[in-house]
Length: 281
Image 1 (cartoon, rainbow, N blue to C red):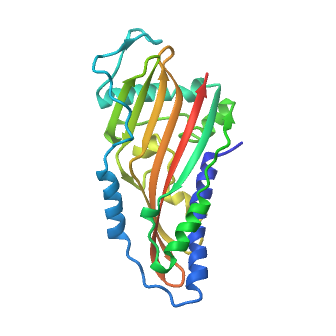
Image 2: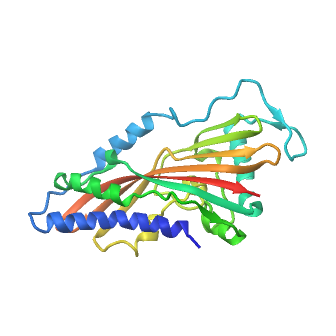
Image 3: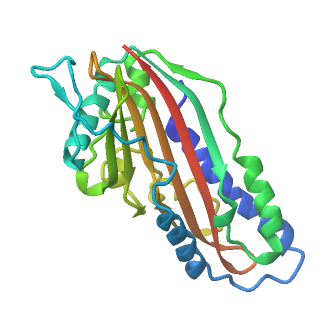
């Protein structure tokens, strides 16, 4: 059985090993670079992302007229418009995946190294960018989860009996769009620092909690924080059944770290995970 959490850990630890190798090879044979302060750069970088808004990320607008389509409910379906209504519909539809789906296929997982977020001592910048891109390999071979146990363990949120416990106060933007035989729910989450499972971003996305990797990280790591920003979830719901049949999760994050190796240094890396799923019942 494949395990999303183990994969997530391996990627994060790989990032830490990149920095360990960099400092060992570059700094071990020269005077240690001066401590690099990343706070102002990191704040500016994340702020730039937030100011970009949702251009190019959001689903198309509804036609303007309320759509009423029959699904498996007591009354005719009315396309929701309020954030609270969209979140409630999303939770209801998505949580059926772990109770009713017979097969879930992870079509691919893309991992993107955001060079604009990378902060290391200048002497290491070029090498760090190259090594990060090398480690961030995509998973292009589909993975099929065909038992209830696998689906619960592997589908987001991994190892939980729910897919979403999302609440409206964690949502920056939400839209529900009529697509004919389906409707599309698009949700963009508020930015969050050090999210935890079951709340905020962690209520609907696979997040890494800093304490989880404390015993797996190289000893040179002294402090670590994560900032998740512009995270989105887009699902396609079949009108006839009210079930989610396709889902895409995008979770960009910035890892800010203090490492102690040939001096104390502040470093930062930006990674985006994008996972695409097809669900069958």
